[in-house]
Image (cartoon, rainbow, N blue to C red):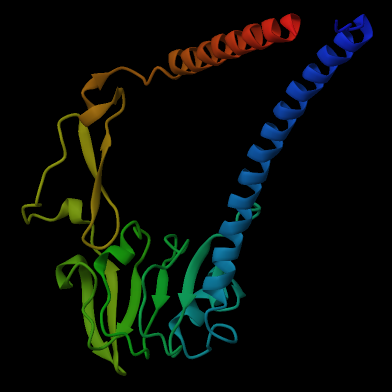
Length: 246
C-alpha cells in the first residue's frame, strides 16, 4: 500500500502551477529576445554596410557634397539629420572598394544617392534596386547599364570612367505599355528604377482590391483575441484536470 499525504498532493499542485507560470515566463522572454535580436541585427546590418570599406565618405565623391547639407557621416554612409531615434541612410559611398560582386544593399533602400563606381563589378541585377523609390543619383562602373535601362532615368552619361544615372523616372507616368496593369480600384506607385507596385484606393482592400469598405481591423483583432482566449481556456481546463487527478 502506498500512502500519499495531503501535503504531497498540495506540493504537486503548487509545483505544476509554478511550472505553468515558468513556461509562460520563458515564452514571453523568448518573444522579447527574438524582437531584440531582430532590432540588433538590423543595426548590425547597417554597420556592416557602412564599414564595408575602410574610412569615411571620400571628399571627391558626390555623396560627400550631398551629405554636407543633408545629413551626417558614419563610415561610408550618410545618415539623415532628424530628431527621431531612427537612423535613415540617405547616401552610400562604396566607390573604389575593390567590390566584384553585389547581392544586396541591405537597409539602404531609403538612399537618395549611391556611388558604386571604380569597382570591378562585372554584373549587377536590377532587382538589387527594387524598392529604391527615393534613389535619384546612381554612379556605376562605366561598363554596367543603369538599372531598369536608360528609359528609367532622366539622364544617363559616362564621365570619369563612371556611368551616371540621374533622375529616376516614375514608371507609372510613362506612356509605354507596362507588362501588366494594376487591377481595378487600385493605383500604380513607383517602386524603384523600372519597378512599380499596385496599392488599393481608399475604401478598398483585399485580394486585387475587390473588397469595398475599410479593412475590418476590429473584427480581425476580436477574432484573434477570442481564439486566443478559447484556446488558452481549453488548455488551462485540460491541464487543471490533470493536476486535480494527480
